[in-house]
Image 1 (cartoon, rainbow, N blue to C red):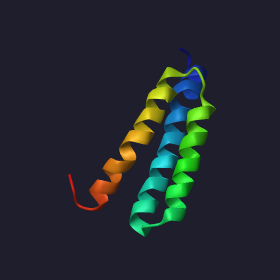
Image 2: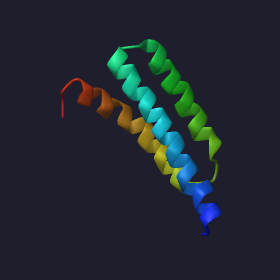
Image 3: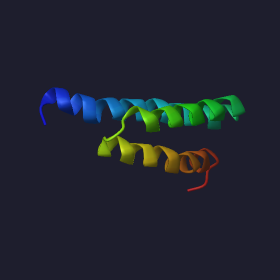
Image 4: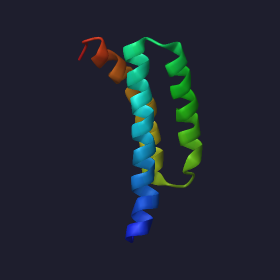
Length: 78
C-alpha cells in the first residue's frame, strides 16, 4: 500500500471515527439526546461511507461498541 492508499484506507476512516467519538463524549458531558441522535446519524453515515474497506469496517464495529464504555467512563464506572 502506498502513501495515498494508506491515507484513503486507514487515515481518513480513523479521522472520521475520531469525530464520532467526540460526539459521544459531548452526549455524555451534556446529557444530551440531541448529541446521541447526532452520534447515531454519524455512525450510520460512517458505516456506509467505506464499503469494502476491512479497516473501516472494524472501526465501525468499534464505534458502535465503545459508546457504552465511554458513557460508563463518564459516570465513573470502569
